[in-house]
Amino acid sequence: MRIKRYVARDMREALGLVKKDLGSEALILESRRVRQKGLMGFFRPLHIEVTAAVDQRTSQGVIPRELDTLQTKTIQSEIDELKSLVKQVMIQQNGLLSRESKEKSPLDYLYRQLVDSEVEKSVARDLLKEVGRDCPEEKLTQAQAHRQLRDKIGKRLKPVDFNGQKYIFCFVGATGVGKTTTLAKLAAHYAILKGKKVGLITLDTYRIGAVEQLRSYARLMDLPLEVVMSPRELEEALMKMKDMDYIMVDTAGRNSKNFIHIQELQSFSKVLPEPITFLCLSATTRWQDMALITNNFKPVNYNALIFTKLDETSSFGTILNAACHTTLPVAFLTNGQKVPEDLEIPSVERLTDLILGGKGL
Ligand SMILES: Nc1nc2c(ncn2[C@@H]2O[C@H](COP(=O)(O)OP(=O)(O)OP(=O)(O)O)[C@@H](O)[C@H]2O)c(=O)[nH]1
Ligand SMILES: [Mg+2]
Image (cartoon, rainbow, N blue to C red; front, side):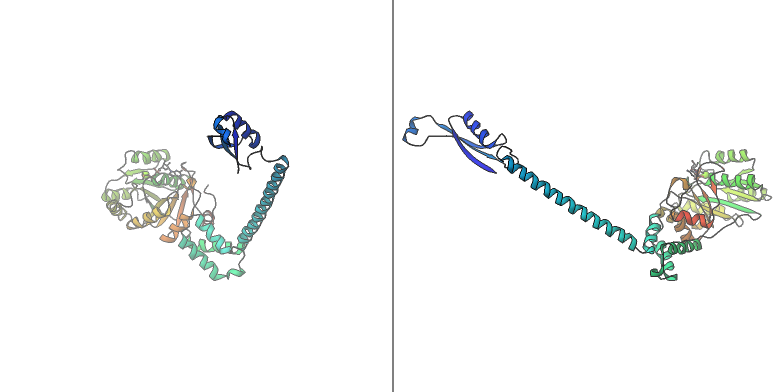
């Protein structure tokens, strides 16, 4: 900052002096009227004293051209120096990062992969502990660790096969997860593709249109349908369908937190002789809620799992979580609304692929 004082006859002259000397960027800090020096000053008109200042960094007027170029050069060289410094730091950091990812142990890497797929942390830790126990980590390559992990996951997924003679399939689960649609897909699979005798029963008389939904599938596939309202009627319906290979029982979707509803469902399920009761779970449900559902439906004695709506998500770790928590097989997957196409009977390998980050479709 350069500060200077100017004395002139009037303001115009003073400003002219300031501009000439300090340039047009100068600021007027103060102006006042002053008497000229000496005795004669008393008899002369008052002058104007102006105090002006200029910031030498911004003013081109006060910085000589050579100085200006010099400063620009200095600044430019400082910028260049900074640029090369930043470059060096970035190179070093990238080096560190890539070394870090290379140095990350195969088990750390797989743990992250599992957790990213929404496998519960405790389940992921247990699996990798087992992998580490079987083979010391320092000897393990990434590919070996991956193979071992697949093997451990596979052991937790029970294979299941419903190609026997006679079955009663019952579908339970939270509201809107796809019970009726899945039942229709399976009815078509066994009746049309496998040529089995299939009968349908619905207990869902709560929701308007629920019976009609199943009736239209029954009509389309030419399958018998019984609508029942009490455990006693269920017994009668089962009697009527005793010659069927597969009896498929649809139930109303239930809020698993409503204990009365679960009890009611239980009173129906007790009537079914040796049923395969599928707990239908939507793959879009977060694990915290799914864990609650798997617990709350326990009174119904479900003994297999179905995962629906795989097409609506891309992480499938909850399949492993549910399989581990319930120790039950995952019998079917559904991946779309189309009946009967969007149904899958998954192998253990397919489930493992999904859990380890495969595609839903
Ligand atoms: N994207 C997708 N939608 C599905 C799938 N399965 C069923 N849906 C759809 O989910 C909705 C509910 O299906 P429903 O079969 O009526 O479900 P629900 O469990 O019987 O329902 P409630 O009886 O009311 O409890 C429908 O729009 C289905 O088309 C699936 O695998 N993927
Ligand atoms: Mg339904």
